[in-house]
Image 1 (tube, rainbow, N blue to C red):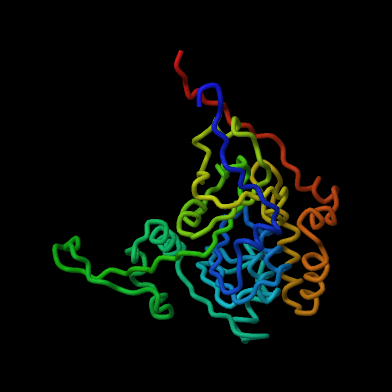
Image 2 (tube, rainbow, N blue to C red; image 1 turned 135 degrees about the horizontal axis):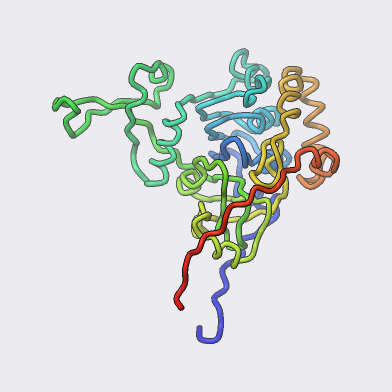
Length: 317
């Protein structure tokens, strides 16, 4: 409008309201973030709200998945890696898979690239996605979701070939963590980027959790850093330190001591129950969780500056 401005839709919500609105019993929920920007705070709120019978899709199933299992939220896990990220095991997950204790877990394993292909197929609304990397692997023998089809085109030797394919994944909701977004949901990520964009586009709904919400002018000043655009986002949640114990590049470091401790905590079911009672059920929200850790703890995870040089996007004169 001449003399006016167009206001974008404000999609900001509290974590409690976003989980209540977009995560329901029986849903397929993707939680993505690779090495850093893991949506731990969102996982905790799902536990607090008592969601059940979820299918959780996460390429690197780690501590947050172990905690959601302990919270009784997860019936099925779809993943390409399980472990406590170089620091040990996931006790609750191991008990479920190895001994069906306290109940079995339906675990569907793919390779990393197989998971990427599943997200790509979901994002592009394809019936399947082909890949060559399962040749020689025993994964197809344990996962019936990995199949072969006859290619309509000749192979490298000119003859017909069969190729492995994986099905799309189309989560009911994808939840990611990021450094910042504007109120409309234009989401910016730097440092390690994983499959956040693909996971969002594959889903019916998307919730973005961020360290901070910034003004439109901040996003516009560096548009190439926008990994997920607003039209793909349904809710934006401001949750500082919401990726702990993982890190958020430029905001805080990885809590390596927590990762090492988790193997011992989760190995003992009684100790795990006590931890959940104190740190998840015993906190109203993530702000209380972070406050309970204490500022001395956060000071030990503080990071210094490593500024990127500005770029000149240019403008009309």
